[in-house]
Length: 136
Ligand SMILES: [Mg+2]
Image (tube, rainbow, N blue to C red; front, top):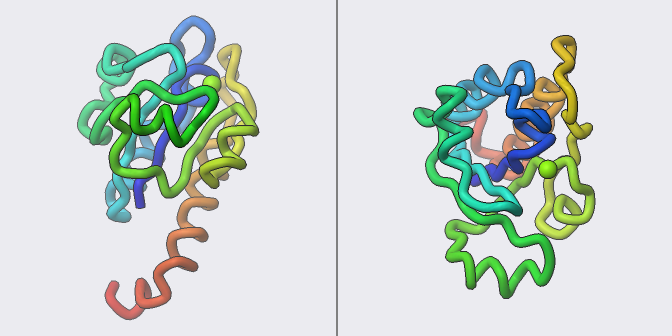
């Protein structure tokens, strides 16, 4: 599945510190066969992705639409379409389908929301692919 992660307050704090367990979660999602994208309302964030050594897990970065989602998807050239999005902003998770994560504004080393994200994606993807168990 194509998993789209928001950047600010989803993956990083206001001053760019990485949320706990992001790399671990990205690695597991890749091992499970998913593709990971990072998008942001303020632009393309390869700098932050590289700064935290996440480049090996991320297929592409996009500018994220903040409104008028369908039209902006085309305008920003977002492809493939997200299957699941992870964002601290509720409205966009409702539009595309996904999980709203607690905003990670300040560093909090015992934050474990990424574990919930991984569990959510695992359960959705196994329900959508009933042959998964047979083939694995
Ligand atoms: Mg955000």
